[in-house]
Amino acid sequence: MISRNLGLCCLLSLLLLAGCNKKAEEKKTEIPAVPVTVAQSELGKMELLEESVGALESLADPIVSAEVAGRVAEVRAVAGSEVKAGQVLAVLDGRDAGLTRQAAQAEAGRVGSLSANQTRNLERLKQLRAQNFISQAALDDAIAQNAATENQLSGARAQLGLAERNVGKTNVVAPVDGRVEKQIAIAGQYVKVGDPMFQVVSLKRLRARLPFPETMSGQIRRGMPVQMHVAGAGVALTGKISEIRPMAGLSNRSFDAYAVFDNPGDWRPGATVNATVVLEEHADAVIVPEQSVVLRPAGEVVYVVEGGKAQQRVVRVGINQAGRVEILEGLQANETVVVDGAGFLTEGARVTVAASRAPAAAQ
Image (tube, rainbow, N blue to C red; front, side, top):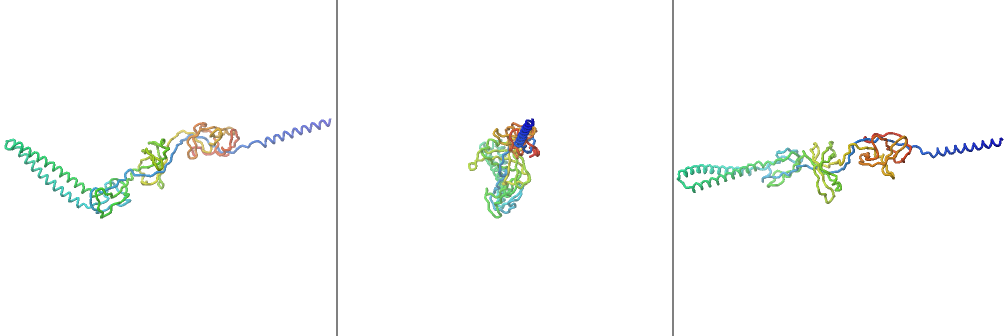
């Protein structure tokens, strides 16, 4: 009897020892929870952007040329001078133009007196013809001579007007408000009609020339919003694409788009401008942090935390911008997604939330 009891005790001891070993093995092989950080998917605005580095141009940068021949008597503006439209930039010697005007005045006076005398004579001849004292042929000759004299008077007056305009053109004036970019003429220089004297650049209205690769020709369109800023300037501007050149350059295979805007005050033609064109704008996009999207055999996925476990969601992504990703399919707003640690997860993995990150839209 004692022997049988001893055997039962040994058997129970062995069974108990085997069960303890099995529980130890199960505890030993259990996978620990993965520490992760999470964030809430949110609705927000996403923009598809294309950047370009271009140059500022003036809408008006005329070359001011001499309209009359003469010697430069005085220069009143130099390169860098701020000028107003109509402001005198230089003065030409006006003595020749003045003498030409005097000659035109004298000729106009002479022909005017001759015309007045012939008009009075014609009236007398008409009265004599009415009394049959002269022939009709004589009257016709007088009428023709009077008409010719009146034409000469019109020509003389036109020459006088031209001479007076030329006197005014001895003052070389700025055609637009702006800045003198180049001073070509110097005092004492003789200039002919058409010789360049100054270049004035208008600063009021500017144009940004923005090159884009030819592969973007189907995406850049007129009316698209563009954000621009210039290095060293504290003001950023938002404008629109107003013009697109249809031809691509042979050397760089790019085409130019232009945005016209009012100068905020300190921008200068020739400066480098950094621009960003908004190609698309999605107002109510589901947004998650960029780290939440990982690549798996099923495709791009995010892991949603449900009941302490990671649930895999296959998603279709859209715009990726500034550390944020737009989710087009597979995820809704206000779901808890894994951010840090997503790359170490599999379907159904246990997770422990170490921290919650700021909302995706605030990244």
